[in-house]
Image (tube, rainbow, N blue to C red):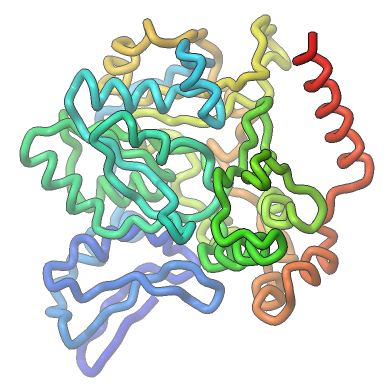
Length: 395
């Protein structure tokens, strides 16, 4: 990606490799870089050459062009875990380990937690949280790209004050943070997430608008990609004082996401879906546990995959163990159910056309064209499972 005006020329990374980690925006001493939306609605850096002084820091701090190598890397240890706090576990997408870790940083270390949260307009952005009451904003899987904004600068400011910071994000965001900082810190703890890829924020807004219009809701209360009655991926929101789970065309977004149709181009050639990992921890769902080595515990309330990648991470994990159920497992088992730990999502041919169609067609038309509908069998099975839950409650 070449940005040029007059005699000035900045060689940013190629557009199909840019992850929008925002390291360049945060490092610019003249605030000459802003993240804007491309034609498909993905964030990309834009340079204002009236402000640019051609210092080259944006190139130097790009984790794709100039990756920062971490040295505090241990052989990764893998755990299946969940929080012993039932409320925390049930309000989380998997086993509630993030909530436990975040609470430890805030309550025991008097630190700050950074993570992704929806704002009032259902736009996803990274924010900082300093009290446990606001941790709910950061919980839950959010299958789109968050706006980092200038949070890297905030992290650096807190670290200079010798305050502990926990930063959670996708692997490329964690890589961007370390590149921006230029070094690790004893006061910084990082969690990278097992990432399947990120769709366009603009597309997500179109999807949310579709749901609001169809159900005549000015606000989608308690919107979630992970309905918490059981451990699964299921989109839902509050409707007429009940939780409504989405099927058919209404479930278009998650169906397209799971088929890899919507990802950012860099996600198909991800530089960070590998070991060693970027964070002190890697968090995700422990999909597929017990296929080869038995796991005798009930996982229906959610199970976290926790990979500890550094000595610093292991020390913190030892400090929160008493708040968790945890069992050490093998790395091979973790990779078996989470291929994105070691490889990028495959790019399907549908990716060539779907964003163009989404600009020109309605969501209903796109869902039908790309066969992004639940099968009758799936809908019947969902109804059957719902009846079983009702019967079990009556007992």
